[in-house]
Length: 256
Image (cartoon, rainbow, N blue to C red):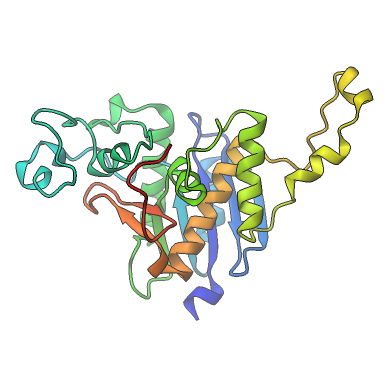
């Protein structure tokens, strides 16, 4: 029942608070909403749901210094060399070992870039509404940390094209379409491209989503995946620092 009445929301925080990009999917992966909101409007939208799983593209918590502890480092595979990776969260170290690049999360808020600060603020506001970290059994409001680059990489089984390039956007939207997410088939873009339009400097890209929209869409898909197919995901990292939801059960040793 909880899954059936839930909305699955993905949020991509920018460096400014005025335009968080979000996507919302229902249980059948139909696109319910896609747009931008300031943080007040975003919290109001999310808080107005009866039940929601929310994937946020930002670190869940600051670096807690776990990578400085021998008891933590000794359990990692591969084990880091002495003195290496002490400024990373555990999940960041684990992803780097898979050849999946990820920004480093500082241990102080004032050292964080704007988008991370906004992520922390968003988490705080949602916690105040009663959201708990996934997995929280039978709880109707749950938060997930997601990392779109890792999600696209593991689903494609290879490192994708750069997200800001046309081919990167096409690749990501094609993947979402293949996963039955309610997005247009981006290959239709090519039906609109003619010699005349190219000569005239026109590149019709209607129906092809922006980088931020594609980040929000995969975040919403990850929220759906975690809620509906929890045995087909991997939680990387330590809960005390923040665990990232990976949409596959088994990861490759490395991605190229």
